[in-house]
Image (cartoon, rainbow, N blue to C red):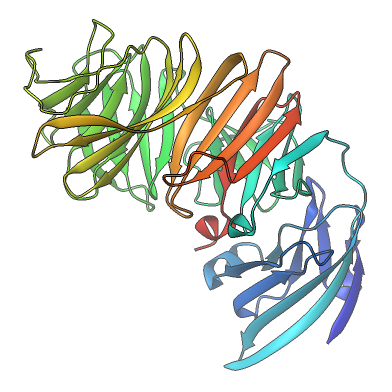
Amino acid sequence: MNKIIFLLTILFASINANIIELSPLSAIIKDKNIKNAIVTINPKNNQEFPFIYKVNNKTIKQYDGVPIFGLYEDFNNKIDIEYQVNNEIKKDTYYLQTQKITSEKIEIQNSNKRFDNRFYFVINEDSAFMIDIAGNIRWFANINKTDFIQNPNKNMFVINNTAFDIINGKVFTLNIKDSTRILRINGDTFMIDKNLITRLNQSNKIINKWKFPFEIDAFNDISSLHYSDSLLISYKDSIIKLDKRSNIEWIFGGSDNKFKLIDATGSKIICNNCNLKNIENVQKIDFLSIKDRIYIITFDNSIEAKAIIYKLDENLLTNEILWEYNIIDKVLKGMALYKDDFHSIFINYKDMDKNLHILEFIWGETIPTINIKIDNAILAMPFNINDFLK
């Protein structure tokens, strides 16, 4: 069945679909009877790729229909929806005409089809939008924070205590104390209030609590280890490992501004492969743990900006620099993250001319697979729709 829908800022009840006013590149196909939907946004030319995602029954019930996400702006989008009704598999095709939304200046310096389903969530002063690897705007929302929420649901994209509803474009200020931070890591939520760290699952049930031995005034990041109840904390220029009873197991780094593996008393642990490096301005530290090896991903903006991966072996008590990428530009601030969906390293930094740079590397490679520059943006993060619609 083919259906043509022109997406304007009004409701088309007769054709059972409506544009989302706060998110003008999204829509909802209104039908509560649909089950197990698979949505395909077809590419607008032969050089691009279809964008495919699944919508579970819980999400369909939440939004009274199938969310249509990732439309091209100013284009007659072709959307295929495969779904079940009364145990019968059906398929509909919609044509959705969108309007021109924005005129961001985006420069694609490198891209690769391996990341064809990758979007990047970008924040400006008064708006948020998403782009694909070809630089197309695929989602947009005006930032108008007029409400508060206590516990953001899983369809919220949380940045700096601001929650974005990815489907309907609503933006919320989190109703938490100023001293509290919220982080989303591997499906769990971490709430940090002064020196108390609480881990909650997707149902907001408390899994564990840790009491950090210091006030978190220079707190960077945390990560849980999948093979234990331990917690990794980046604090000032150090990585600190806590066990499930909040005891310090070891510290990587220290106040003398050199990375080395030391125990909780500050004594050096003898290591056979220590490659010491000065690190003066770590702005973001991320973690990846595989069995007894811990990979520390840092963005170092000291004498020259660079991203570094350190590998720690807890059995051998050794550390080494596994990977390093030097940035030629003078950098105001930046971050480096590991992304498990593509087994990649994501770098985001802002240069002195206020350009925002997005780089993404296949693990182990030294040339970025994705290289994008955006004028006057503030922050960007990788986005995967399937993580939000599980």
